[in-house]
Image (cartoon, rainbow, N blue to C red; front, side, top):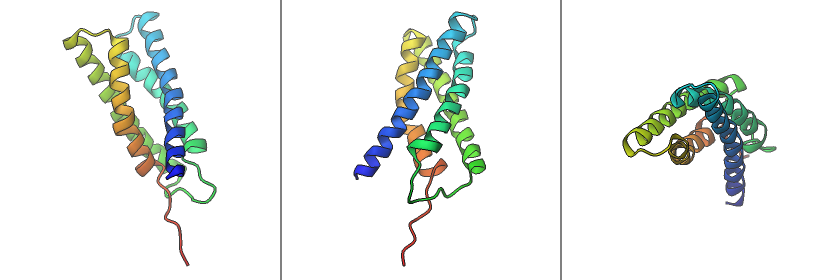
Length: 138
């Protein structure tokens, strides 16, 4: 149980670091370059995803005792699928909340991120992308 909490905490810290990179780039591309915030979310999301994948692979879901079920290549393909869907959900959710509820895009993005991160990203990364091989018993 404690190990699961530690993994969850590490994954959330990795997500937060990747998310901060993503969020700051979204603001940068929107405010400095004048891009629509949904496009800025995609750009920031890709760069934040690289940060998040690297941290998760090398730290969050790494185990001395267990090996990954999939190769790094397969993990990367799975991760890209998760990220593309995550970016789509974040862009669409932010757009809908901003447009219909008239909430500033920076605030609506945080609201959507919290939901997508906990309900979608963590679950798929933990149990699909970085899945471990079962422990062999004698």
